Image (cartoon, rainbow, N blue to C red; front, top):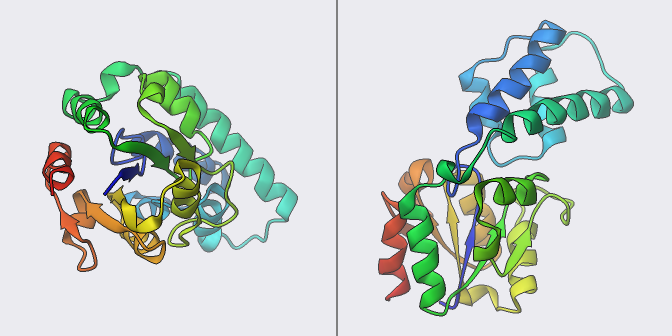
Length: 211
């Protein structure tokens, strides 16, 4: 393989707690129950799709304009929380592995549905590790649709069969496979049957690189 394409949240950094706090604030405001179980359904999906999941338990119907306002309010609060992130939020294992992959000549890209991807990378000091970024600002469909990964390969000028996706969510694994790529799964994705490479630590990507 010539390129690695990384999901962001849950792979390079962990912002789930900030997403949860942001959506919890919206849910509380609307009087809707929202817990960790429902929050797990939001992983890898777009902001508007996440809001629709939260609103499933609401007796009230919301207009598209109201939904846009709620999503914007959540994102504003979420970005305030992201503003507390620093380079210390990236583990030495992640940073050293990315550096070694680049040293071995691999192209690196991001494939994330988040529209805050560039801001997060800037906050934690990872921007310069990547040759391309495909995120929520350049796609119209969220995972498990393959668009975000297909765009990343396009930005890298690489064929899909030369790319390995690194994912922590099942929806991301499905998206990577649909894009015609191999997938390394970490976290929850490591136990999914369609994952090509099941890894327990980020540094194990160097073993995949050597194959």
